[in-house]
Image (cartoon, rainbow, N blue to C red):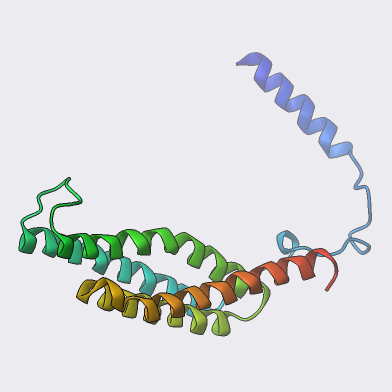
Length: 167
């Protein structure tokens, strides 16, 4: 304990004497050096996406009772399995969507990113409704949500590359 305190005091004394390598005026400002103000729209879309995911969990619970598939089983009735796959597929896409949307909004526009995010939610609902009805009716919703994520992902990528290379 005593060594750690002495080491910390020596480190603090040394660091207080270190001069910055470059003047702040010549440094290129980065996101860590400026306050980032984010639109509330991506926050609301994020919460809506999480609420949608929660709803898919409720649908799985209802399907368990309706089709008599006790937990932890995930198979046994094709109708239940489709409802379960909707939830799992939503969970698989949720991190890709959320991270892409937030990075897109950071580099471009919060409202535009949120609108594309809302389109993702609509696509997920269409996918869920179609898949719960019949497996062959999920394609349109899947394509809409996949296109929304692709736009967000590419926008995030190009925003990051543009920032990195001075764009």
